[in-house]
Image 1 (cartoon, rainbow, N blue to C red):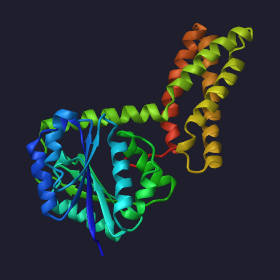
Image 2 (image 1 turned 180 degrees about the vertical axis):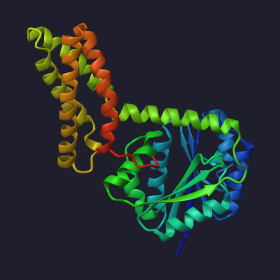
Image 3 (image 1 turned 90 degrees about the vertical axis):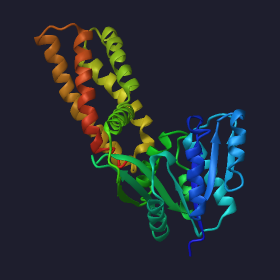
Image 4 (image 1 turned 45 degrees about the vertical axis):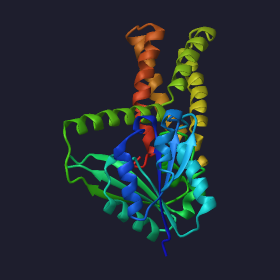
Length: 315
């Protein structure tokens, strides 16, 4: 039987001294939810604000801002020590406007589905997912505390960690009754751009490719302009570095290594041919030819590498 419905709400300085937030958490308490509120670096000036909550919520105070991921993991440790297994935990951004009925749905689904991460998503009339609730049972606390990341990266890493450990994810979709306005769409485009930029940085290790470029120039100089051989060794070294940096993202190391270096080998052949044509046929300077082929390599690599590291579509 479900005994405890607990909601973790990290509160950052931007939300402090907000009467709407106080009204919201009082509504949660009225609906039998237990609250853990993290004062994440709001400062001494907001002490009175958080003291108001101590009568109906557990308040954890951080002198400095440590991030949403770190705050949630600290709250999970508290739950682990003070509650039993008949407990469902949820966390979300309170300003996303979830209804109590939607919270109840996620809570019930999470309790029924043991060892499963339930993700409730709010979608507006433009079919844009604006917000998410994470819901899970007590049994997943230890697992979620092993997920890396102290800030927003924590939530992206959750999906990856679930995939690696074969933890099921169950999605619930809620449609916003009030639709969206133009600001919603602009905000979503900004979010999508930030997400895609982060995804690009994670999948494509620009440091590795920068190393490849400069290694190529150095090796060419010391190999009497044998640029194909220099390209081969430079790519080998940079690829080993790139694969080593991504090792934590792979489910099966040996299998992923075969796929990864198979892709790199194929792209290296194509790059070598392109490099040869640019230098011998089009007579481009060495540094310019390599820079051009490097850009082409990175762009193709970014598309192909998703065959190896497939993001969960809900990341």
